[in-house]
Length: 67
Image (tube, rainbow, N blue to C red; front, side, top):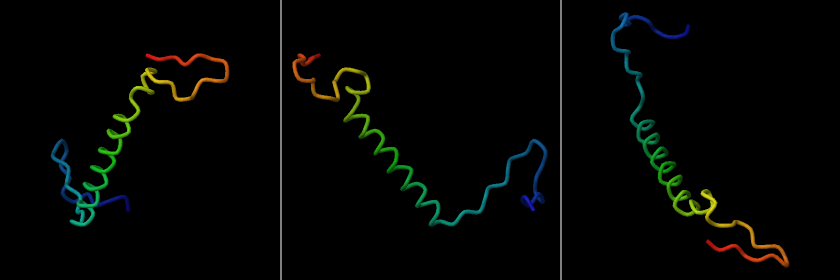
């Protein structure tokens, strides 16, 4: 029920799952897209993440903090 245990050896290599070529290509494409999107967002927003840039404009009567 949980899987096939026909070729399993104790302390041996695990059997590779059978995955279609379409799924492998889609996985690589989506993984690369996520990787590049994350690094693009980091590139755009790293000053704000490190506290070097203020997200919000200063309130009325406050001085703008410049780094």
